[in-house]
Length: 321
Image (cartoon, rainbow, N blue to C red; front, side, top):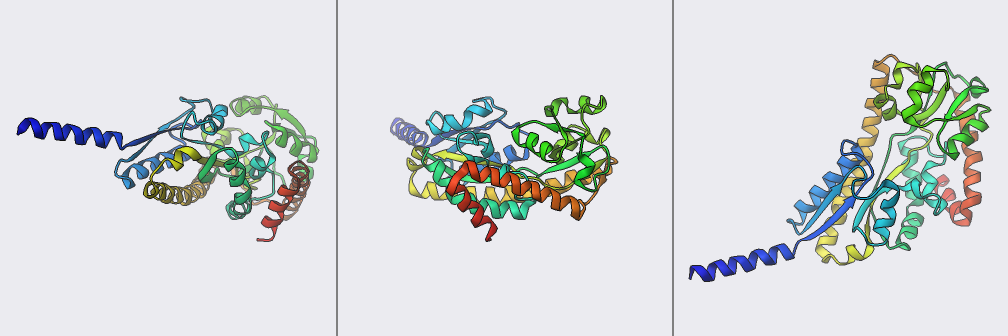
């Protein structure tokens, strides 16, 4: 009798294990990033909601795949799920880079409207690549740091402005500043030697890189709020039982809402910390806002030229909301 019960228990355990689906989910961001923490919480909630039938293991810091390899890995089914920054794939299709068009959506409210306008086209594009979107969360906006006060765009003319990609180079050129290519890790040294005088980066970078030690003025212009996206390979999602699919989508909706709230809260906290460290947190003048908006119009028009009619339709939808 005992032997029979043991055999039945063993069969039950084997069945329970075989019924569990396991997903690996790589991200290029560190475990202490709020984005990664949000993804980990999503994974925990999925396991809890499904009673352990779906277990998602988050691999942080590019440990499973390098950041620039992650999208391709989930597309080709090498991993079932993944997280990556959407604009990192803009070279594939301009639609992926919409949330990084400067001065188009300046702030969380506008960024959400832009996301809602772009969502159908971006999700359709990813679906054509065999990828289903679960949720997406913005980083804090890119704001203006300067060693001197900036009341209008002419205050930036001739200055050395940090650039780190084609968009920031173009911004510097439109402001008639001198673009200087400097990566974030090199920025403190460049400031110390006078190699750069102003730049755009997030409040988080200002705190983490201690930029407040050398830069005294911060203008929260939120030039753009790039988004991370967490996705699943469509075939992997389709392989789940319908009730499990619904629970995954429920956890994803919660993660998206939580992520947006957390991002905005942290942005406020980081800006307060910059002020506490001695920076002057200054509201951009109406003149500066108008001039930056004009740059946004120019760069949006440039983006539409590359994105074509589909891109124009998204911009029209955004502006009509």
